[in-house]
Image 1 (cartoon, one colour):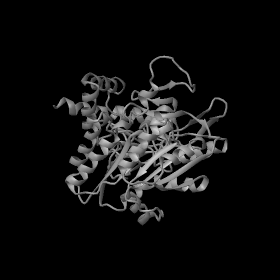
Image 2 (spheres, helix red, strand yellow; image 1 turned 90 degrees about the vertical axis):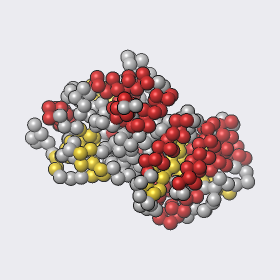
Image 3 (spheres, rainbow, N blue to C red; image 1 turned 90 degrees about the horizontal axis):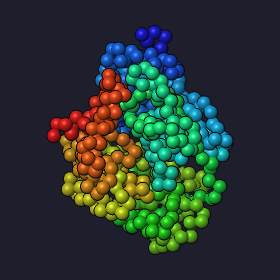
Image 4 (cartoon, rainbow, N blue to C red; image 1 turned 120 degrees about the horizontal axis):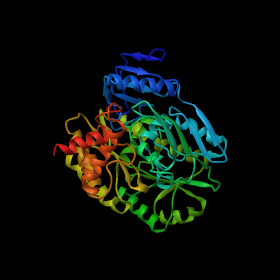
Length: 440
C-alpha cells in the first residue's frame, strides 16, 4: 500500500518539552497523492496517524506509540505563491515560518503571527495549533490570518475550505474548524495566509526595567486606558533575565522587577515615555530592536538549561484580572517552594509560568493549580500552546464551567462525524476531554 513512498522504521522522536513519539513508521510524503495513500492505509489498518512539522509542540500533541508519523517538513515545504495584489501567501505545510517571512519581507510584506519558535516551526504545525506569539496583542493568532485550506480527510477525500478573500460568507466557517484542530480532523496539505504590508511608520522598541510584575500589569492597564495599541507587549521576570544572561550572554540589567518589552509606532512614543516615568529604560530601533526581540524569543531555551524538569504553562486571563492572576501565581510558587519564572505576552493577558522541578512528583498537581487560576478568573487554560494530551482534563473543566456541557458534546460530535474511524491523532484534545468529563 505504501510502495514508492519514502519512510523509515524504528526511529523515535520527542517534542520540544520531552513528550515521547514512538511511531511504527515515519513517512515523508512528497505530494498530496502520497498523503491520500497513507491516510487510506491508516484507515484500512486502523493505525493512528500523527502529523509532524518541526516538533515544537508543548502540550503532548504528538505523543504516540505505534502510529504512522507523517513528517511534512522534508518535501512539502514550498511557497507556492505570494500574491502582491490580493495580499495572500499560498504555501505547503512544511514551510518554515521564519523563511516565509524573509521571502515576504523582500516584497514589502510580512505575516504577523510569530510563535516564539518561529525560527524552527512550520506553517502547517502552527496552523493546526492556531499558534500565537509576541505580536498577538495587535495582530492576534494564526486563527485570524488563515483564509483557506486544503485538507485530506480521514476517508481519503480532499476538500478545500475557505477562499483567499478578506470577505467570504459562503456557508459555515469550516476554515476555523480545522485551524486549531491539532491534527484530529484531517491532514492540512495547502494553506492560504493573509499577509499585510510592512509598517511604514517608524517602530520603536522600549526595554524598560520594572519595579515588579504587578508594576508591569498596572502599566498594561494604563496603556489600555490611554488606548495605546502596541506592536508587541512582553514581560520577562528577574529569573528569566538571569537565565538569559547566564546561558545566552544577553547582557540585560538584572532588575528585581524584571523587564517590560514594548514596541510602538512613533506617534505613541512620547506618551509611552510619560507612562514609564521613574523607571530605567532604553529605546531601540532597527537591528538593536531585533536583538531585543530575539533575546525574548529565546527565553524558554535559556530556562530549559536551568532545570532538570520544566513544565511550560500557558494561561490567559482578562487584562483586568492580570494583577489577581499574578498574585495567585506567586502564592503557588511560595506554597511549593519552587522556581516558577514568568514569561508573558502580557499585553493580551497571556502568561507563561515555567514550573521548574527536580522531579515529576508534583508536576501535574502544580500545573493544574496554575491552569485553574485562568478558569476561575474567566480566562482560558491555553492561549496558544494548545491542549493535546496534557490539558484535556482541564479543557473539560473550562468548557463545562464557562460554556456548558452541551458545547463539549457538540465538539465530540464534530470529531465523530469527520473521523468516525478514530485515526487522526486519537485520544487527545476534545476526544480525551469528553472522556474525562464522562467519567465524572
